[in-house]
Amino acid sequence: MPVPRLLVFDLDGTLINSSLDLCNSVNAMLEHLGKPPLPNAVIASYIGDGAAMLVRRALGDPGDLDASIHDESVLREALDFFIRYYRVHKLDNTLVYEGVLASLEHIRSRYPHILMAVLTNKPVGPSLDICTQLGLAPFFFQNYGGDSFPTKKPDPQGLLTLIAEANAIFAERSERPLQADEVVMIGDTDVDVLTGRGCGARTLGCAFGLSPHALAGAQPDALVDHASEWPAALGL
Image (cartoon, rainbow, N blue to C red):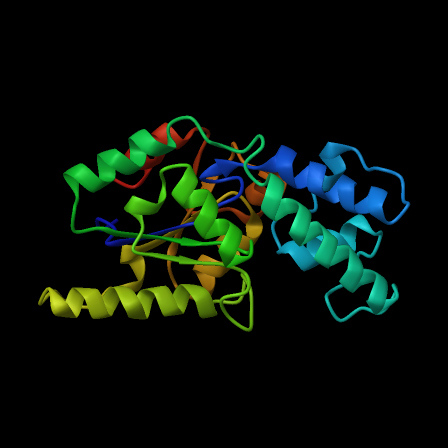
């Protein structure tokens, strides 16, 4: 495998352990609506497809964003409350996974030509704030969220945009354009694997994240149990 030149990271379940703050925000939303709380393990299984889908699933709707099982006004109220609450409480318990900062520093110091970015289905505002507050922002040339484009992962639009932006940077450096197998999508869910495959990129799965069973079923090109394993898995 060639040495990668663009690494694109998911956020929740990959760079950060945000499960408890997301679960608390969902249950605060349910309490606001007069509904009973859900177990954290159940809520965690709903994470990965963006805030709107998380809220919809917590309200008992397994369908897609166009489903009409629930009153749309209730959904809007629920989503608005969830986003407001989460913005205040997003860093109450959220931490960078052990090994993440050391691995990013290793890659940055030994391979400074490699570009790194974040592509998450979390709204971009909280994503930027979290990366700044937790010391992740300096490693990434770009950070896109679930509301940065008309579509979310696994649609390839976000990853294709990052590839185009990386190629513009490489052109300024008088370096050749990226080959598909020089791009690696790194994440903890099948959504991330499908996103990478949609662009012909390689995929690296993080089994320590939020959806290890779905991730294993998606069969990423490589799989790690700890963020400290990233450099070795990437050939770095």
